[in-house]
Amino acid sequence: MLLVFFLLFSLWLLWSYLQERKFRKKPYYALAEIGWRTVTPPPFSERIHSVALVGDLGNAGPVSQDPVMKSIQGWLEEAGEQSTIIFLGDNVYPVGIPPQEHRLHQASVQKLQYQLDLLKAYRSKVIYLGGNHDWNKGRKNGYDYLMRQQQLVQEHLQDPHAYLPKDGCLGPVSWEINEGLLLIIINTQWWVQRGFRPIGEKYGCSLKLPTDFYSRLDSLLTQNKHRFVVIAAHHPLYSNALHGGKFTVKQQVFPLTFVNKRALIPLPLMGTIFRYYRKYLGANEDMSYPPYRRLRKRLLKMLHQHQNLFYVAGHDHNLQYFQVQGNHYAVSGSGSKTNFVAKGGKASFSHENKGFMVLDQYRDGTIWLRVLEPSLTPGAPSVLAFQKCVYAPTTPPAPRG
Image (cartoon, rainbow, N blue to C red; front, side, top):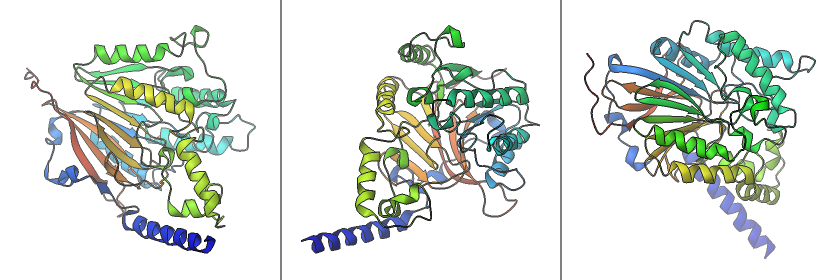
C-alpha cells in the first residue's frame, strides 16, 4: 500500500509539473479578456493624468543596467508633469534602511539612491509607502528602519509628503489629483507588524484607536463616490501567488529552497505540510495569517459596498489584475523580483514577469489600465502586456472652455 501510494503521489507530482510548465512565465488572460488588443484607448494627446504603480523595487540597480528602471524612466519622460508615481512598498531589500553601524547600511542606502537618482528630473508627485521589508521584515525594531527610510526620501525629494502615511501611521491619507481622480494611501503593514506600531497624537497620528481606521476610510469613500478612487497599499486583497497560498511543484518537493535556492533536497511530505500551513494558517505576511485575514475580510466587506474603486498593492512578485463585484484589484509587485503566479481563479490577467502598472485618465472621463514590461531588446520601448478600460463615466464630462 505504501508503494502504491508513493507511485500515485509521484505520478500526480509529475502530471502537475507538466501542467505547470505549459503556462509558467506565460501571460494568462481570462476568456473575457482574450480580445484586449482590439480595444484601444484614446490617443495620448487626450490624456490628462497618468499614475504609475511600482511595487517591490528594492533590488533594482542603476537605470543604466536595470530593465525595469529603464522602463520607469521611459514612462517618466512620456508622462510629463501631469502625472504621479507611487512606490508600493518593499522599496529596499532585504530589511529597509538599518542603522549606520549595520553591515547592510551602505548597500541599502545605495539601493534607495538608485531610485531617487532616477527621480531627479521628475517635477510631478512622488509617493512612497512602506512594505514589510521596509519595516525590517516586521521585527520589533522595524519602526526605526522605516523612519530612516522616510527621512532619506523626504530630504532627497524636498517634500514632507513624499512618504505616506507619514511616520508609520495607519492612514488613510487622501491625495487630490483632480476632480475625477482621488488617491488614498493606507498602511497595511501596521496590521501585521509584530513590533512597535505608532498610533495617537503622541506619534503624529490622527487616529486614536485602530478601529477608527475603518470608519475613516468608509467616510472617505462615501464622500468621493462621484469619482474614481485609487487605494494604494502594500498587501493585496486578491492574489494567485505565494502569499495567497499558491506554490510550484518544485517548492512542494524541495521546500528547503525557500531558505536557499540550491537546497534541492527532496522532502515532499514536509513540503506538502508546509504548503497547507502557508495556505490555511500562514506565515506573518500571508493572507491566511490571522491579523492579515481579519484585515482583508473587513476591507473587502467595506469595499464591496462602494463602486469605482481600484485597489493596488505589491508584496507578491508578479503582475495580476482582478475584477470582483464591480471593483478592481491589482498586484504590481515585480519591480525587481519575480515569483510564481497560478492562472485562473478570479484573475482576469496574470504574468510572472518584471514590470509595473499604469492608470491613464483621459478627457472623455475614461480611465485605462496598462501593464508595462521591459523589452527583451536593449533600448526598445516597454512592452504592453495588457490594457483595459477600468472606468467609464455614465455622464460624459462637460467640454472644457
